[in-house]
Length: 436
Image 1 (tube, rainbow, N blue to C red):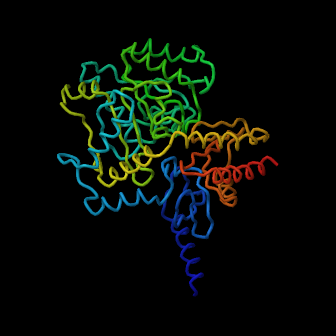
Image 2: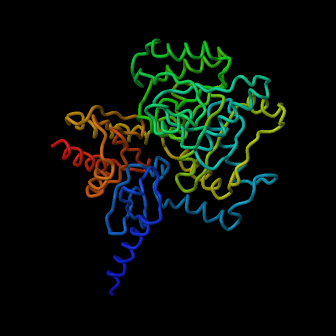
Image 3: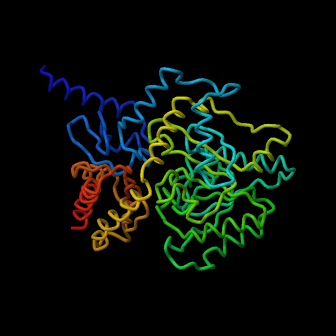
């Protein structure tokens, strides 16, 4: 067997074993969606085992903002691993974690003064919800044990996170009988750049007015509702939510896991409304996609309220909390972002996406196209067959992972105009073929 045959045999073996042993996210084992083996990546390019090269439009679920195999992030990881890759965070501290927490407090909206490090976005949401509940327990108000969320929202796949995702149109309606039940307001209808209509907040206002005595917190994704529909809404809506939470003594949790670190054109989406939440969740892009890491920030009022209660501390402690390797890479990633002209770059990406997406509006199968920051969305009139359309996208040289009716891109921030055009052109070829 020559070397080429050996490589082909090995590739076949990997994919066969993958189908035999590996359970991929949102994938059936009885009718699996084919997986594609990546052997290397650099910049915005993914290299498959069969030699195919793909332009990445997903930033690996929105986290690899600096692209792949970045020398600065590589060096940060290599330098840290020679010192200490992991050590428990209970009773021990270290510079990478302390430096990261200090930097997060510096760059997030004023008033977020304490940082609890976790190891994934869903856990950051769990931590935020737990903080809100323990805060009110410590305040002697145990009846404040419900949450108010928005329809079309998505906050993660763990149980508390699932309980505040859209209960009907979301991914988790199967579990509605085993999850804690909360309150839901209609999704915001005023577009990001639309004229504000106070009626948009009317039902939310009615719920918080009548239920505030049992509401611990409101939880929402600021400005962009991500996996629940890639919907962009008005900063005025977010501003009014902050006012209502203050008026009725309800905490506000901002889930910035998808929107944080520049994706919408502001460093954090809350900045579009110039508001500070009581609790903020961060994840995804925090390490530039190198390591799993998340953070939940809160105000000093929240942290003090919790620590002055019966327990005397916050009752949570992940094993890999404050992982030094992840924190070191996060510090390098944040510095890399902030030292660049990132705002102008995101404006460039937005302008290119808006221009390149215009022709999609004429396709009979397309309901809407929209872009904000480094997010581009093609909303189809009918759901797509993910497995079938994925194969066509790969053949067109692009990596895009649709869901439901949405074909969308969240490209790495280093994407050039030419790479963005390649990406969108590949998508257009596939969708036009479907329309024809």
